[in-house]
Amino acid sequence: MTDREVVDRLAITQQIYRYCRSVDRLDVPLGHRVFHPDSHADFVIYKGSGRGWIDFVCERHRSFLHHSHQVTNIIIDLDGDRAGSEAYVTATLRARDGGRIVQRQFWARYVDRWSRRDGGWAIDERECVIDFDSVTDVTPMADHERARRDPSDPSYAVLGELE
Image (cartoon, rainbow, N blue to C red; front, top):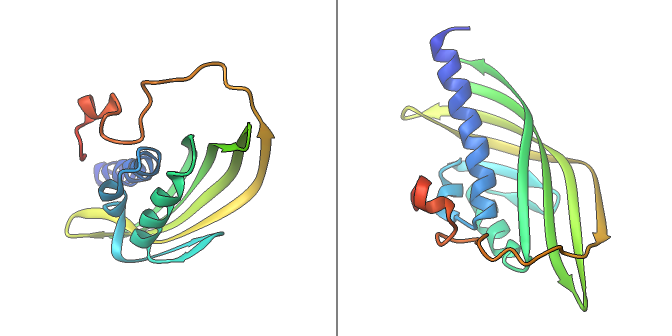
């Protein structure tokens, strides 16, 4: 593997991680930078522009108490200024449902087509493939006050308001 390939793989992986951070912190500008302006996203509940997806999902996530996305098993195939990737994701979302707290979990894969434009990698096409899901009643162990879904989250003090 060449140094360029290592750098490209790292740049794409960082973008995948930034996507998760953007939807968990409701950071729309960060999420927009993960997708090219002319990108397309295909999620179960949305089909349209990638940046439109960020607007949609961040607004929709405001109705949840908490949410967290983790990505693993990232495979990237490079071809010059183009790439394809598959990343496994676990998304966990908590919501109030009357007097109950329910937790929804999704085990899915982000199947992405990428291109490098003006020196930076971003998504051209994303398809979210859900492999399975569940919903359960949960009893929270504590109220975790420090976790925020905005720039007051402690991570912004070390990562900056906008990466």
